[in-house]
Amino acid sequence: MKRLFYCDHHEIPLPPGHRFPVRKYRLIRDLLTADGCFDFREAPLADPGVIAAAHDPDYVTQFLEGSLPPSSVRRIGFPWSEGLVRRTLASVGGTLAATREAFEHGWGGTLAGGTHHAFYGEGSGYCVFNDFAIAIVSLRAAGLIRKAAIIDLDVHQGDGTAQMFEGDPNVLTFSMHGAKNFPFRKQRSRIDVELADGTADAEYLDTLALWLPRIFEFAPDVVFFQSGVDALAEDTLGRLALTHDGLRRRDELVLGACRTYGAPVVLTLGGGYASPIELTANAHANTFRTAAALWEIAESARQFARKS
Image (cartoon, rainbow, N blue to C red; front, top):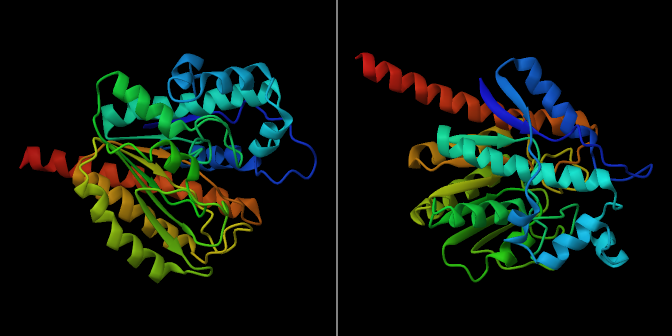
């Protein structure tokens, strides 16, 4: 069974009416547990020193100690708590663990992460630390990679990731997002593809298929896939019009390209704010189901070839 990492057991105390859909994380795990195809592991807490290798050490310390200025806490969007610290460390730890899985088995997954709005010295948009940056810096320190690609298909631009790697020629940041959606001050990714409000399946998939070859021409040693599902038509913050089938075909395009190219791929969550939230949870679960099916087909083909 495929191993997946989770951190939803670390609760974040949120005030009544808070917009963040914290309930979706446990819903996703419940859906995938019912499939009986996945082995769930608690995400380990990330070492603060590993986080500080990618972020401003002062910012890391202030967050962990609860001494951030009120304006910085407001920009993150969560009230500070010890529960938030544990959940944040586990979210990063899940991405790091999934990265190790990817290098061993071809792909790894975490039911969290994708925190692409976090900048070097501050958090933003429900993102405290940038798990992609932390993982890439960690892989480089271990001598495991030279080049990395981030495929970000959340409906909101991965602005923190874009800024953190803007001057780095060995990291390709690809963000395909709503042109008029948050963040309203965009950063510069290596490749930014902006979509009009109301973009539906056919145009979305044609556009993605057009750009994917550019990513693999870069020859990355690892791919991080931010698989936000807020492009779903029912999403309250998305402003695009994808169906569940469109999202499934999106995932097949990205993950199939990774399989064909042979790059380890790390699969993280991202945004999703549908009403009801069960629609979001189902869309996220389908992404992991798609990955498992693709790699199972590939493994079956390899075994058949050996016997032939």
